[in-house]
Structures are given as C-alpha cells and as structure tokens.
Amino acid sequence: MIDLLFIVALTLTEIHFGVPLMYYWYAKTKWLPKPWNIKTDKNYTPKVTIIIPTYREAKLIENRLDNIYNQNYPKELIEIIVIDSGSDDETPVIVEKWASKHKNINLKLIKEKERKGKANALNHALKYTTSNIVITADVDATWPSNALREALRWFRDPAVGAVSCLKGPTHSGPVGVEEGYRHYYNILRIAESKAYSTPIFHGELAAFRKKLLKKLGGFPTDIGSDDSHTATLIALMGYRSITPETLWIKEIVPRKGYHAWRIRRAQHLVQHFQKILKKAIIKTSKRNNGEAIKTFKTILAIEEYLHLANPWILAIAIILLLIDTLVFNSFSALITLLLGLTLLSIKKYRVWITQQFHLITATLKNAWSKEIIWNKQAKQLD
Ligand code: GDD
Ligand code: MN
Picture 1 (tube, protein in one colour):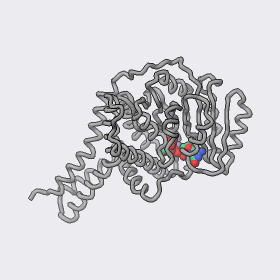
Picture 2 (picture 1 turned 90 degrees about the horizontal axis):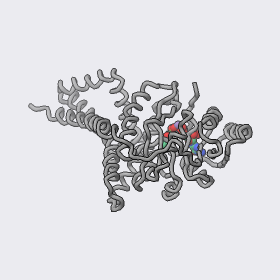
Picture 3 (picture 1 turned 60 degrees about the horizontal axis):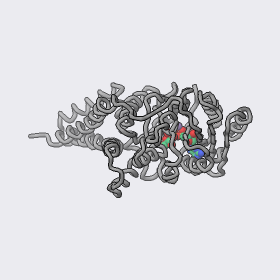
Picture 4 (picture 1 turned 120 degrees about the vertical axis):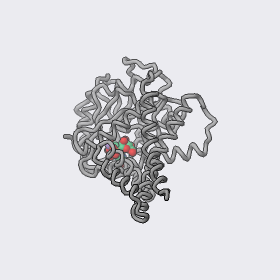
C-alpha cells in the first residue's frame, strides 16, 4: 500500500527547504551582482541627528558615546539625542558626565519619567531633532569609524529613503549559531536592497529621511519592530530602503538567555510581517505600481511566507512523520525522522532548524504578550 502520509510529509519537507533555498539561489545569482543604480558621494556629509534610546544601559552607554565620538565625521554636523525612559541605574548621570567632558559635540539628554517602550521614546526624541536625516543607534552596537559616512553617502540620491547596516556578533555569547544565521540573512539583505529594498532593518544603525518619518507619523508603537516596519513602509512609498554591503556593525550577543532574546526579536518580526500582510490585503494598491515596487512586493511576499508560513510547514511535516511512525509503523517515516535528527550535527542545518523553532515559538507567544516593552538582557563587552 502506498504510504500516503509519508508522501505528504515528504512533499511538505521539500517545500520547507526548497523555497528558501531557491529564493537564496535566485537572490544571489540574479540580484546580488546588480549595480546599485544609486548616485552616491563619499564626500556627502549632511547634518545628522543620532537618537540613542536607553533603558538601564549604565554598563555600555559610555562606550557607545565614545564610539560615536570617534566617527570620522565632522563633529559640528552631528547632533546626539539620548532619550532615556526612566532608567533607575546610573545611565542619565553617566550621559551628563560624558557630555560635560565632550563639549565640542552637541548632545541633548531627554529623560522620560515613565517607560513606554523604545518606539515611543524614539517618537518623543524625534520632536527635538534638527536635521533632515535621523539615525537610531542602539546602545549595544559598535560601529566602525566610517559607519556614519558609509550610511549617509547614499542619501545624496533623493531616491533613497532609508539605510541600515549588516550585523555581525561581537565575540561573546553563542557566536557560532549567530554567525551561521547571519551569513544567509546578510546575503539576502544585500541582494534585496540591490533589487530595490529590503523589508528587514536593524535598529543598531538605521537611518531615515525625517520628512518620511513625519509622513508616517513616526515609528509604530503597536508592534515591536520599529526599524523593519518603518523601512518597509518607506519602500512602499516609493523610496529605497537599503543595507549596503560595505556597512557592517557589531552587536553584543547575550551570553545568558540567548534563545529568549532571539525569540523576542522573532516575535517583533512576526508582528511586522503580519501587519504588512493585513495592509496589503486591505489596500490592493492603486498607488505607484512601477517595476521597482512590483519587485518589492515579490520580496515582501516571499519574506512573509518565510517568516509566517514556512516554519509551520516543517512542524506539520514532523508531526505527520511522527504519526506515521508511531501509529502506522512506517519504516520510511522513521528513517526520515532519524535522518533529520542526524543532520543536526551539521551547523548550517542546525542554525536553520533553530530559527524555525524561534519563529514558531514567537508566533505562539505573540498571542499573550507582544513584548513591546521588553526585559533588559544582561550583556557585556568582552
Ligand atoms: N528610551 C528607551 N525606552 N529605550 C529603550 C527601551 C525603552 O523602553 N527599551 C529598550 N531601549 C533601548 C535599549 O537601551 C537599546 O539601546 C535599544 O533600545 C535596543 O534595545 P535592546 O534591548 O538592545 O533590544 P534588541 O537588540 O533585542 O532589539 C532589536 O530588535 C528591536 C525590534 O525587534 C534591535 O534591533 C532594536 O533596534 C529593535 O527595535
Ligand atoms: Mn540590542
């Protein structure tokens, strides 16, 4: 008798692994080699406002400010706004001290009494910004000294609405998993950016044209993914949201609670894609339907599929294989399951499976907490 359950499970497994592999192959061969088609200028140095949101960052904030101070960018063109949401540690005091020692750079500290989350704080800070370009800078990130120049040169072209970075972990925490995950993702980010725009941004360095932020009414406060969501809306407005291949930053990966951290971030990404999906269904867009926007809609559709549906296809396949093994004594199902387990010894495969597990857990967790205000993860510099 044909083992129908097994055939269905196998087909689902093929879809689960096949779609992302095909997308990766397509993006890498068709989009990645493309020219940017953006007029950039290395000597373009506009005035810029860097917003640093802080919540209990006493350990890291001084380093972060030093890191920005050491950018090879004219200091008189930099405005720093630190927006602190009622930290009960030394954060605000350290910032004030730092400012008094570095009078040749313009720094404003805004202290909120109550903590309402990162996006809320960014919107609050936005009111005080005096430049046309605004960059968000998380405290746990370290930029190379040319990061500002690398990010800002793209804004010479009016077609560019937002620029973000690629991420690599600093050497603390479970770097292996994080690096493996980043490789695949970084290639996709660059390829999508070259094709038109990428729907995934990183708040560790995310630069936006202020006029577009204003049009959007600021960063979204009902979902966690302020960075990616804003970038996607800007791309849908007809501007490019890109992550250039030359702009890399380092991010501290927590040693403890790595999975909880990744799940929370996955929760935010899921919220972002769900919200975009709803919008796209409600507004069957009559607006700007150029080639570029069409490409972006394809990118969005695939990324939505990869984040919202694909992990579940794997989960269903595993359940079917288990039923087939336990209830129907299927030998093929058992072998497939064992093969799946054995492959976990290969790092790339393990990284992928971990990510699927994070996305599934994230979607379930979103049902009871959206984690718009999140616990501080213990992080430290090496
Ligand atoms: N003012 C303020 N108020 N700042 C906050 C708050 C808040 O309630 N919560 C967090 N922050 C600050 C942190 O101090 C840090 O500088 C930055 O926001 C990012 O917080 P992390 O705790 O490092 O979060 P993450 O790295 O896991 O978050 C990532 O995902 C988020 C969305 O999913 C980053 O990419 C964020 O940029 C992104 O917003
Ligand atoms: Mn962070």
